[in-house]
Every structure is written in structure tokens, then in C-alpha cells.
Length: 422
Image (cartoon, rainbow, N blue to C red):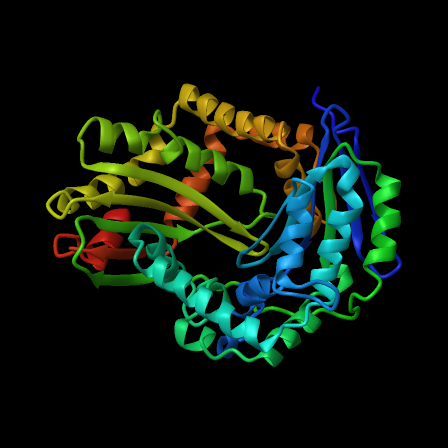
């Protein structure tokens, strides 16, 4: 039996949840603040503000300059970073055990006392514009933004995390501060830590350090409305970059774990169907994989492939054939293999303080409680052939989303792809 005996959660008076996962055998602590807000919480007029805020949080506070923040954490051998996604933003650090108070103080400082200096903002806007430009120059990266927008057109969930250059280049200081104060409310935040950590000590530090978080009711978000459709952009590239996808399942959906097993079986490794049939047997691609992306109230299930201009004509029909035959041809051995891959990934991640810290925070944000490893493994083990067949049919029943970039003349028309899948 797999047990998570070291997890504790305390809610402070202001609503901030403090969660710890004790790993007594290590000498480090990973910790951070996870906010249940991201690109999905942005109005269209300020698309990119969540990501720009994440950058600006490191650019100086009332007590520390941008250089001070970097120097203080690195002076003790620690590191500090952050990321923004469509539904979450995280600010996290890893330090030696004795430097926990410093890490808590720095994270609390940047989230509550950032000055958003105009000079720093001008420089950081330029940095983010460079990041946007780099993404545009990376076709196997930017294709997913086009896929997302096509799946969820006209919605915050479909807009790019980095934002649009024309918006980011002129975002004012007031927009960033306003987003912070509206959305970074105490009850939407989780302070999580994993490693050699004393829970009561972290609660004590957090109660003192996070006194100035705003409170109040969070703003609602629009429900996810998957629509699907077709996006194609001819570009002078060596390869066609293609994503084919469908309406997926959310974190709380009873089919969530089945969709993950199905994705692993279909395109999750070198033994998967797509890899064996399309790369190994036919040599049509260098890279092909499937994915199951979940949100709180929906998700996406898709396949990415990179192929040559000539090979594109054969690639899409083959992918469609594999999808159509999937529900009727599942066998017990490949199901066992896919379940084993998922379980091994979960158990191997438990060796990392950072992975355990992040997982704990995300469980609290999505499910309002920690999920034990035994519970997750049991849900994966419960996935069987009939459920996978039903889920495969459920996914393929939605209108497809097709996104293609590069020399795309030989990529089959959208209506023809939809007809194959029917």
C-alpha cells in the first residue's frame, strides 16, 4: 500500500491554505505560492497581463531591488522561478532547510509589495515581446496556441498565455496592479512545501509574512465552450506541424484517468500505437505524440505530428485510421502497459521535492483536498478496456480541431478529415 502520511493542510484566518508534504530524508525544501488564476482570468483587452505580472513580480519591491532578489536567493545556493498557465500561476523556490524563512519572506515580499517601477516595466515589456517573437519562430511551440484558439474561439481559454504583442507592448502599470489585487486573493492561493519541512513552523512563518493579501469574493470565469474548427497557415518551413484534437475531459470528470491512459496507449511512448505505426513502421515522422490536457471544466485531447511536405498527404489519413479503429481493437497487454507508464511516472515524481510540492498545490486548487498517491494509482488501475472504448468514442464524437503550419498544400481538407473520423 502506498501511503502519504506526511501531508498536512492548515487554512489561515485570511483564507490562505498552507500545505506540506514531509520528506525527512532530504536536506532541501521546495516551496511556493500557487494561484488559481491565469490567462483564463484575463479580459481580451489585457491578454498577457497574467504572464507580464509574473515577470514583474521579480523586478523590485519596497524592500528589495530586482538585483537584491536574485542575489539574496542565490547567496544561499537557492533558486527562484515562476510560470503562468491558463488556469494557474506559480512562484516557487528551492532552498536548503535552514534557508526556509528567507524563501518565504522573498515570495511573500514579491507578491505583496512589488513596486512595478515604470522603468523596469518598460524593460520587461521588451523582454516579453522577445519571448513572443521567439515563440513565433518556434513552429512546434506556436502551433499549440493556434490549436487552442481554434478549439476555444473568442474565449479567454483560447487566448495565448504570452499575450499578443500589440497588447503586451502597451500594457500600463495600472492594469498589472489591478489584475494582482482583483485575483491574488488569499483564498485562491496555496502555499505548498515539500521536503524536510515542519508544518507548524511554515504555518507560523506564513501567518507573519502573508498578512497583506487581499480578501474577498473572486470574479467568476466564463465556462469552457469547445467548438473546434480549422486553422491553416502556409509558412516557408522544412516541416508541416500538425495538431489534430477533440473536446476532452476536465480534472473532475469521471473519465479523466481513462483519457490519460488512452493518450498514453495511443501516443505516449515508443511502444505506443502512433509511434510504432507511423514512425517505426512507415517512417513518416520524426516526432508524434498524443496528449490529454485537462481544465477545471473541460479539456482537450489531441495528437501532434511533425512531418515532411510530401509525407503530409499520407500522415493525416493514417492518424484518422488509428483513431477510428482504436475503440474496437484495444488489447489487455497494451492497456496494462499504458497504466504501468502512468503509475511509474507518478511514483518516480515522488522522489522530487519540487514535483511533490507542485502536485500538492494543484490538488488543493482543483479538488480542494490532497489526493493520496494510493487513491490516484487505484483510479488508474480501475481503467479497463470497455471504459477506454467508450471514452475513445466520446472524444471522437466531437467536432475535430485541426491546426496546420508550414508547407501544408498536401494536408487533407478539414471536411475530408471530419468525414474520415465519422
